[in-house]
Image (cartoon, rainbow, N blue to C red; front, top):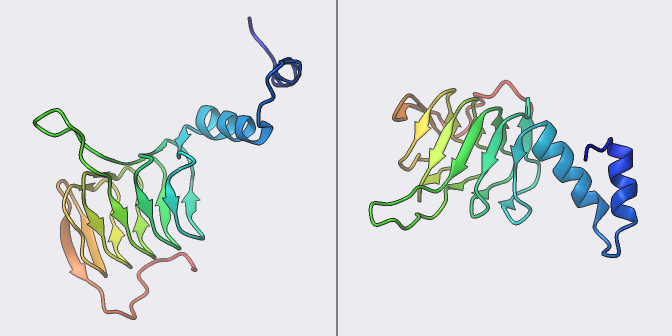
Length: 154
Protein backbone atom coordinates (compact mmCIF):
# COMPACT_ATOMS: atom_id res chain seq x y z
CA UNK A 1 0.00 0.00 0.00
CA UNK A 2 1.49 3.37 -1.01
CA UNK A 3 0.82 6.45 1.13
CA UNK A 4 1.38 10.11 0.58
CA UNK A 5 2.97 11.80 3.65
CA UNK A 6 -0.36 13.29 4.81
CA UNK A 7 -2.15 9.96 4.37
CA UNK A 8 0.64 8.26 6.32
CA UNK A 9 0.27 10.79 9.14
CA UNK A 10 -3.51 10.28 9.24
CA UNK A 11 -3.04 6.51 9.24
CA UNK A 12 -0.70 6.60 12.25
CA UNK A 13 -2.94 9.03 14.13
CA UNK A 14 -5.75 6.50 13.93
CA UNK A 15 -3.59 3.72 15.40
CA UNK A 16 -4.44 2.64 18.96
CA UNK A 17 -0.79 3.04 19.96
CA UNK A 18 0.34 6.67 20.15
CA UNK A 19 3.64 7.47 18.48
CA UNK A 20 5.95 10.43 18.97
CA UNK A 21 5.36 12.51 15.82
CA UNK A 22 8.60 14.45 16.11
CA UNK A 23 10.62 11.23 16.02
CA UNK A 24 8.68 9.98 13.01
CA UNK A 25 9.17 13.31 11.26
CA UNK A 26 12.91 13.41 12.02
CA UNK A 27 13.37 9.78 11.08
CA UNK A 28 11.53 10.25 7.79
CA UNK A 29 13.37 13.37 6.70
CA UNK A 30 16.80 12.66 8.18
CA UNK A 31 17.16 8.96 7.46
CA UNK A 32 15.07 8.43 4.36
CA UNK A 33 15.33 11.68 2.40
CA UNK A 34 18.82 12.81 3.43
CA UNK A 35 20.38 9.42 4.29
CA UNK A 36 21.63 10.69 7.66
CA UNK A 37 21.93 7.94 10.25
CA UNK A 38 22.61 9.76 13.52
CA UNK A 39 21.11 7.71 16.37
CA UNK A 40 19.36 9.53 19.20
CA UNK A 41 21.68 8.07 21.87
CA UNK A 42 24.92 9.30 20.26
CA UNK A 43 26.81 11.58 22.65
CA UNK A 44 27.09 14.92 20.84
CA UNK A 45 28.41 18.23 22.19
CA UNK A 46 26.85 21.58 21.43
CA UNK A 47 26.91 23.29 18.04
CA UNK A 48 27.46 20.27 15.77
CA UNK A 49 27.35 21.36 12.11
CA UNK A 50 26.40 18.94 9.36
CA UNK A 51 27.46 20.76 6.24
CA UNK A 52 25.95 19.54 2.99
CA UNK A 53 24.19 16.95 5.12
CA UNK A 54 23.76 13.87 3.02
CA UNK A 55 24.89 10.27 3.39
CA UNK A 56 26.18 10.36 6.95
CA UNK A 57 26.50 7.27 9.14
CA UNK A 58 27.47 7.56 12.83
CA UNK A 59 27.58 4.61 15.26
CA UNK A 60 25.47 5.14 18.37
CA UNK A 61 28.46 4.60 20.69
CA UNK A 62 30.48 7.42 19.09
CA UNK A 63 31.24 10.54 21.12
CA UNK A 64 31.41 13.86 19.27
CA UNK A 65 32.67 17.01 21.01
CA UNK A 66 31.44 20.59 20.81
CA UNK A 67 31.74 22.87 17.76
CA UNK A 68 32.52 20.04 15.32
CA UNK A 69 31.92 20.19 11.59
CA UNK A 70 31.09 17.02 9.64
CA UNK A 71 30.68 17.09 5.88
CA UNK A 72 28.76 14.74 3.59
CA UNK A 73 29.43 11.07 2.87
CA UNK A 74 31.17 10.43 6.17
CA UNK A 75 31.17 7.18 8.16
CA UNK A 76 32.10 7.10 11.86
CA UNK A 77 31.89 3.79 13.68
CA UNK A 78 33.36 0.62 15.07
CA UNK A 79 34.99 -2.28 13.28
CA UNK A 80 34.75 -6.04 13.51
CA UNK A 81 37.81 -7.58 15.11
CA UNK A 82 39.53 -10.85 14.14
CA UNK A 83 37.71 -12.79 16.88
CA UNK A 84 34.32 -11.63 15.57
CA UNK A 85 33.65 -9.10 18.32
CA UNK A 86 33.21 -5.40 17.65
CA UNK A 87 35.56 -2.66 18.78
CA UNK A 88 34.49 0.46 20.59
CA UNK A 89 33.68 3.58 18.57
CA UNK A 90 35.73 6.75 18.04
CA UNK A 91 35.86 9.65 20.47
CA UNK A 92 36.04 12.96 18.63
CA UNK A 93 37.27 16.03 20.52
CA UNK A 94 36.08 19.63 20.42
CA UNK A 95 36.46 21.94 17.38
CA UNK A 96 37.24 19.07 15.00
CA UNK A 97 36.62 19.59 11.29
CA UNK A 98 35.93 16.48 9.21
CA UNK A 99 36.01 16.70 5.40
CA UNK A 100 33.75 14.89 2.97
CA UNK A 101 34.07 11.16 2.22
CA UNK A 102 35.97 10.49 5.45
CA UNK A 103 35.89 7.12 7.22
CA UNK A 104 36.78 7.02 10.94
CA UNK A 105 36.79 3.50 12.38
CA UNK A 106 37.67 1.76 15.61
CA UNK A 107 38.61 2.58 19.19
CA UNK A 108 40.48 5.79 18.38
CA UNK A 109 40.59 9.34 19.67
CA UNK A 110 40.58 12.46 17.53
CA UNK A 111 42.20 15.31 19.47
CA UNK A 112 40.75 18.78 19.92
CA UNK A 113 41.14 21.25 17.03
CA UNK A 114 42.12 18.51 14.55
CA UNK A 115 41.34 18.75 10.85
CA UNK A 116 40.68 15.60 8.80
CA UNK A 117 41.09 16.06 5.05
CA UNK A 118 38.59 14.89 2.45
CA UNK A 119 38.73 11.19 1.63
CA UNK A 120 40.86 10.24 4.64
CA UNK A 121 40.61 6.78 6.19
CA UNK A 122 41.36 7.27 9.90
CA UNK A 123 42.17 4.08 11.84
CA UNK A 124 44.63 5.41 14.43
CA UNK A 125 44.66 8.23 16.99
CA UNK A 126 44.95 11.82 15.79
CA UNK A 127 46.74 14.26 18.14
CA UNK A 128 45.40 17.70 19.04
CA UNK A 129 45.91 20.46 16.44
CA UNK A 130 46.86 17.93 13.74
CA UNK A 131 45.93 18.06 10.08
CA UNK A 132 45.61 14.53 8.66
CA UNK A 133 44.81 13.20 5.19
CA UNK A 134 45.26 10.12 3.06
CA UNK A 135 44.58 6.40 3.14
CA UNK A 136 45.52 5.52 5.81
CA UNK A 137 45.45 9.01 7.32
CA UNK A 138 48.85 10.48 8.10
CA UNK A 139 49.76 13.70 9.88
CA UNK A 140 50.38 16.44 7.32
CA UNK A 141 51.23 19.09 9.88
CA UNK A 142 50.63 20.24 13.43
CA UNK A 143 49.02 23.66 13.72
CA UNK A 144 49.96 26.14 16.42
CA UNK A 145 47.48 26.43 19.26
CA UNK A 146 46.11 29.75 17.96
CA UNK A 147 45.94 28.77 14.28
CA UNK A 148 42.62 29.09 12.50
CA UNK A 149 42.78 26.70 9.56
CA UNK A 150 39.04 26.49 9.07
CA UNK A 151 37.30 28.74 6.59
CA UNK A 152 34.11 28.40 8.58
CA UNK A 153 33.47 30.90 11.36
CA UNK A 154 32.96 29.15 14.65
